[in-house]
Image (cartoon, rainbow, N blue to C red; front, side, top):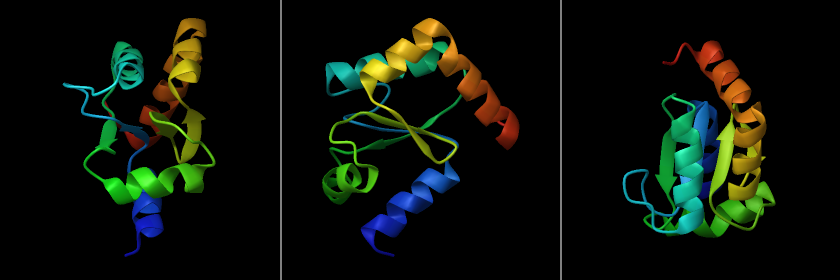
Length: 109
């Protein structure tokens, strides 16, 4: 499996996935920390990939997604965006609706 296939598989297999620097318990940048806080506020489980431990993903995902920075939030196979978009969506209620919809479709809690 090449790196693009791996990325596509991760996105397909995880209805809520954040590519971030660090882990949810120990983010390695402020933007990743803010994004995780926003996701956590929605109260649903989400998967993550630490791009600092996956250099190939860190190098290739920005090209694949046409999005140059991290974090990157993917929901139901679609790129939602980065930190600013995640925070904006949390503040206007869109993030909760999108996550609730994603978890209903996949029977997640």
